[in-house]
Length: 125
Image 1: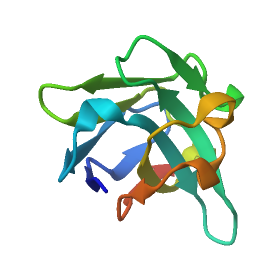
Image 2: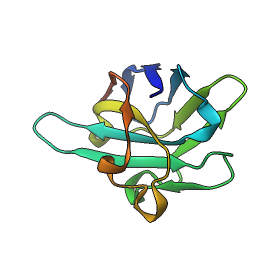
Image 3: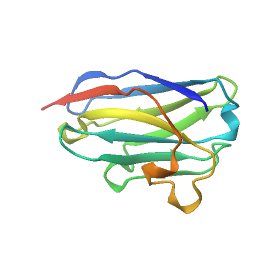
């Protein structure tokens, strides 16, 4: 299994931006589909964004469309989540995850076999 480490979280004011990174090791990164999920205190871990193995196909949860962009650099074994126009409701722990073949269920956390430890994003109003 691939090992994942997130970075880039922090405290930002509403309307601000952050770039999250997730570095992979221990596997062939380009063999994995990648996702970002987030979890607020007391809530479930929810889907945020998905990118396929080549980076040619992406998908987003409705509330982040137009504000967040997922990308990957297979040469650097890294997936990114660029977040703009952040809102207080984006406050959560953000996790990256790797899946071998999620198929149509890229939004389901059960499809992902490897997870990072998370990075906290806090958006103040």
